[in-house]
Length: 497
Image 1: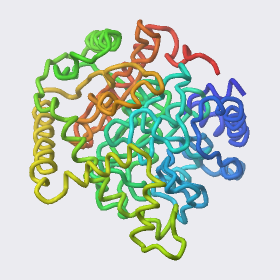
Image 2: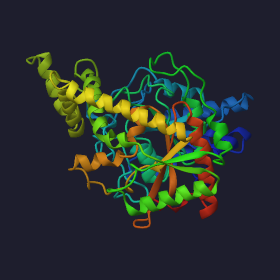
Image 3: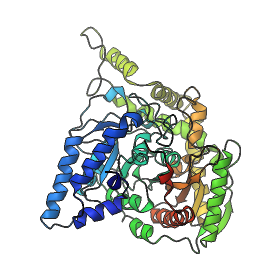
Image 4: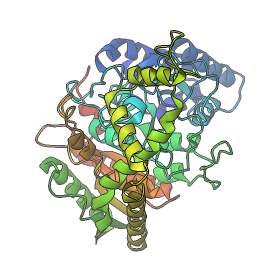
């Protein structure tokens, strides 16, 4: 079992295709690993044992018939519990959808199944993707496999923890303000936020519709690229989906190089609040890029300092609108319907019981920002700042091919450390939020361990809209340099569970 669960997704798929392993054997090994460690980690909210084994058997039968298998056929995956899955619960980490079983698959779910990817189950997350630590889940927090007393990032901490604890070689996350990249950074894994609109949002429960983006999570850059290629592409069911070819991400990951590239370093992505070890590892990464043949260019993007404030007006405003659908009348939780109360009273009681504190905080903030007399002062002003941020990115990408930064200002903090301080929690997304506001693509990959606490540090790579292949080209080059430098993948240093 240990040998199987330590394989990369690419290695696993190759062994299944050759007949050296069966998809059922691989699935059983990962289900056994979940049984062994997830009681401690709590990465999964629901394990679909029967469904996963049925999907695996279908892949094995297809291979026995001599049919061609896809590049990830038979590879297990952990799916963030924000995508609808026909016949399997989808809760988005909230009591208001506890026990809800969707009647249809999200487009992303369907594409995974069509590719022969085996979905092991649904992973834990901050309620409605609102949070940076997975502590806001109504079903309890997830632990970071590097140190179970620390957070695995958020909102997609369940997916990142599943990867880091070898419960799955692949995972899916969503990124509204950094919820793929920040968990990847603090768990020593790889996470990619594709260009907004590159991966369908149909069937993904909405938090902030102009920011939300699903994307791949893995332990290597190539694995992330292979998964990216499976889930990306135009979807007529999603009005925001981009009708354009998927960039050649797998080719870029297989031929990583930064020779001759111009790499930007933004001065706003360092300073007060950044952990010394994070900056040290980032500076070392910049030197690695220079040694690999990249030209380093200093950039000034002044509007990035306003990104956090703009985000926490735009995202809550959109969430206050999106979450209005959870009224206790059509599906999900219903409280107080004793035959004597009005529909309004039932809705109020249901939301009181079903939504957690962070969701209520953001709904109230968003409703206030959109209210009469405040719309222009708050939401309208935030949208103007968003335009300035996009203009800063456009100007930067006239000078450079990609931008790099720390993914997060600090390594993983202790569970409970920031629970009573929302502003401190929000600062975890300081480096990731500008990319969501602009809609371009970004990746986080491991760049070493912070010397103060021996915990993972993430390097963020940012690329222009629909130039996602640049992430993989740079990421693969950096990853190879790090592996050569340290002699082994970083994740091998993670403590065993």
